[in-house]
Image (cartoon, rainbow, N blue to C red; front, top):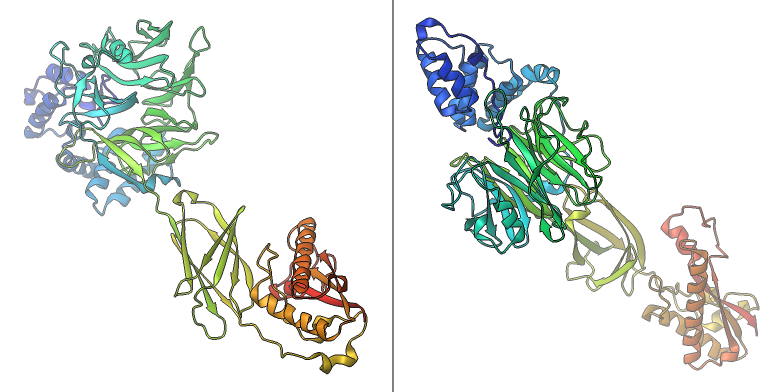
Length: 636
């Protein structure tokens, strides 16, 4: 990635020393080539040095070749320098380790371990890969990439602005290193921004899209501020044009002239502006004095009168390079940097809002090549830049879309005794505040999916299984949603043990006031669906036994009482039991029994038959004892 030090030089080691006289190589020409960052010219001098038996510039030769993206050749040179113990500069060490990761040799772990102490002492840091959804990103190159360097994308209206070293597209613009271009959404044809004169923002930017370097660009959400990276008008002491950031502000619907931020200095670079629309801070990258080393990320804020003194983001800055900041809509800071244990080259990192430790984004966003300049359009898509394409080692723009695989659930219900699958069983799923009812298929199963972005949460649900002739079962399910994507939950339900039908005459001597007629007649439990009070078919079958007994004993008067277990609130249990008692009573009356012979009452959870009260955890069989319907004889 050649556009962090867009105009700042590398002072290479051998360029600061006199050459041996036998080489007859011009020191002045090499120094000039180095200061002008003309790697193509410099490597010809390095090659001549090697041909004359002088390997003192081997490391700088490898680095120049590296910056030209001739990675295979650079790797061979760096391996030679490594064997000669010539690698001391952290920049060169990082490049060598990156090449090891690109070419996947068996030595990468050993080599990284050898130089880790050197890098750590120099201020480089180890940063772990974080847990984010970027591992599910599908990336592809955009169709408007060229055979030059393309990077620094920024959407505005129906356009995408980006920076490029491609050949000029407008004869009126003098071509230079970097220019800003535009491409319409869903188009593959890039145009110079002067072709978009109907756009007031592009008209403003085009005023300075001249012979000077221009890009990347950043525009506030309300379009009131435009920030651009440009080359300075004056050279530093080495004759190099450093970069600065210009600002134009919308005043009375007219953009002001571009002016440099007040921190401009010919001796350092300011670049890569990113404006936080929520906080009002402008983030940028700079090698100004007072930082942690190399390029650091800074932030500044305008108070309506002036910009505040740039503040170094201590949590992320190291002795290495930090560049291309981007602030997401929720305040997370993304940037590119080099770390000891990164994927290789520049990697994209994230400092979540409120956190003090950055994390590395996972592959495929990051790679063993240079990855930088991310722009997040929304939570699932955006753009980033990389030079990862083997056949085109220039910088390219990539789009990405996060496609998180969903969580797939299958719930299966089986006969506890026969171990067979139960078709047409009712399965109710209570999740949060909603209840879904589904019938099982021929395989005794139902299937559903949950969104993949629930990763990191726990799915807690209440499952109820109901089938005629079987004892209903209510159970809880809890699954932690992480790497595992498929879940199978299997439950067994048992067949009802039908009590033998007992005739009234068989228990005539036991029929007394205060006795539960249901127990005398050996009734099966009266079941209701969860949180329901409708009379089910199996419940009607049992209530018909009460109807038959009351017809045979015409003077019998009973009170029907409905009870619940202690789960749920006291109030809701009371209300539910009352409705169930009333529903059962009205069913009996509907079969011809005089309403004067029957009363009903819901007792809720107030009369448990065992220890299962509020605050006491019980088993399902223990809870079921308290879920009952009684038919108490009050008069004969």
